Length: 308
Image 1 (tube, rainbow, N blue to C red):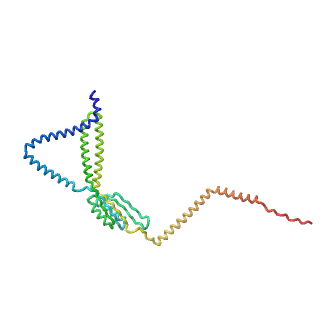
Image 2: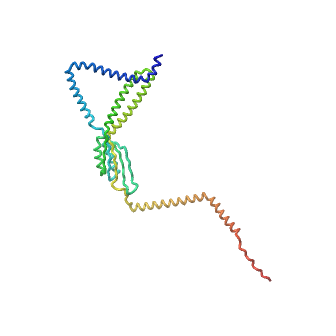
Image 3: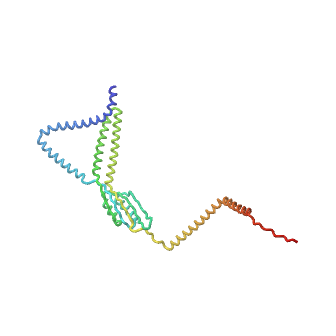
């Protein structure tokens, strides 16, 4: 009874105690192994002298190998180029062929048709190309027209990648330790507490892993923003005489049909409102008749009769 009542009070400290026990055990074992190795090394001075140069040489080899592993910076490259071309449509087709040849992807296309004869036809294309093929792709794109501007930017994300990898490794070790603690936990409350912590750690691992893969993908593939502009404005040539006559005939027939339809609509409106029009006409006619009937008549003097 005493044990069952004491476990709920100490369940909150069970996880930390087990983690401390694991760390303490590993530290004690390493300290004990080091104490056992000290007398042997002190007894054999020649072995100690032989081990020291070897350790120094191995350490120097590791320090030399570390910069070699980081000799290549992890760069996210972005390029922007503006071209003036003779035909924007043909240039877009050529860009599609270059993308397929360079094993890239078209991630955006925006065309702007000219609304005025003085404006020029433009287009903006966004490409994604493997990082090692960026320079060759830019050279092939430059051949499509006249280069107006060209810009390349690079961002070193090597430190961020190392940080994400270190955090991911530590979280994976924590996941393993929590799994061991969960196997040792006895009460249900301890199991649920460790399971919740294990779920949080795994969720953090997934988030960091996604960010790490996103950075690696941005390093592996470079982005190109290509702006195309027509060399001449889109002024349309004057149509031929036959086309002008045909256009005039079409406009006149369209105007006649529109006028006929308008008259027909007016007749329909008059028919619909004809009762009101008849009533109004009757009122006007009655008013005119009333005016004629009640208007003052001019008095006429009677003609004198002749006496016989």
